[in-house]
Length: 514
Ligand SMILES: *[C@@H]1O[C@H](CO)[C@@H](O)[C@H](O)[C@H]1NC(C)=O
Ligand SMILES: CC(=O)N[C@H]1CO[C@H](CO)[C@@H](O)[C@@H]1O
Image (cartoon, rainbow, N blue to C red; front, top):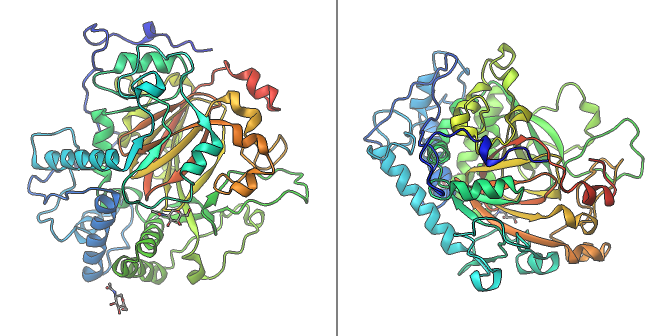
């Protein structure tokens, strides 16, 4: 049960009923001898952007360009003295004098103003492309000005047939006009609607919270792809999911897999972050028909092959991944889902080069040791299970499923469409049963109406959807269903913080333990 009542929140500001949270603007602070220097460059040329293509892909092109010209930019060690040179080499051509983008919090500086301009441009683009289909009249509440407590029947939902027919999950390109979004959940402003958001959180219902300067500062830093390329380096390999199709589904092989179990399309490899970026760039280049992007990706690839830094199967259990996805050229068709997990006890350990602690600096809202930043997001800090980041490549979807804990999901770049459903819908979600390698995940293909016919009840499942943009955080209570669709190359990090049992009966009634 939820034991995190309002009264447990440390009081550290005035008691206005709906005032803002404490204003702290920590971000990427130094910790444990971090190698970062927080230079900021007021002369940095504005990268006025209207989408992640512009915020991430264009700078990438510029910096890959530069690296191609400068040569040798791709072989720095994660901690070596060449670190600064690496950054200089990869500097966008319009940017003179070095430095990284400042956090968005500092609105007085030119860099801060750039970040703010990009944030506004993203919001404008988002609002014109993705519009809630229903207004206050139909919903009974205004999603941007929700009542003090969740109204009866919150969140609103519609049948899977209606929602998925209106906007098929494979349709991820921008269309003329806008998309109608079957949005039944509230959007709260962290600075002006904190207390209301807290009541919804404590009622264990889903919602979006945005406009937290700390989150926006992370987005501002990550807007420049050099930033994460430097952080992730090119010496460490990360677990990355791989599939020849855009449909990813979680699975876990047990000791006694029955022969009849259909293998999922995806497996897992290890990959350096620059290779993931190279492949994400290729996906964008191909989808947009942009020869320059494709050439830049190829340039990154040449350096990678010269360094012999290609993807590897995980050492310990190669033989459990039966997919042979072919030679290097064929791999371009694959989809990848980059994964980075860090947990507090191990974040600073030598085995990770002390490297994983950087994500706690980058995403302080998920740092349970820093309650001033994380108390809203980490509901039960003691139950935290680390920070999990997933970077989605254009085209990636993740199968519908539920998890056994609360989740806060932050989009820190790009756009993702989340389709969510209440645990009460469990029996209509056509889930793989206990014992199946993809237990808790939908057996029907959400994008394929023909596959719905095998489970007619699925068409009646009640669902709701939202398109998240950079800076948005989704609260997903325990056991809520979610299906994820890329709308662009995107960065997502999430953190779990405990389990609640108000939906235990629904979950058990449809055949699962809680
Ligand atoms: C990409 O590279 C090819 C071969 O080097 C070249 O012919 C083509 O013009 C390049 N395209 C762009 C858009 O730079
Ligand atoms: C932006 C975009 O359209 N990206 C891809 C997303 O995934 C689908 C497949 O589901 C591709 O067809 C799109 O090109």
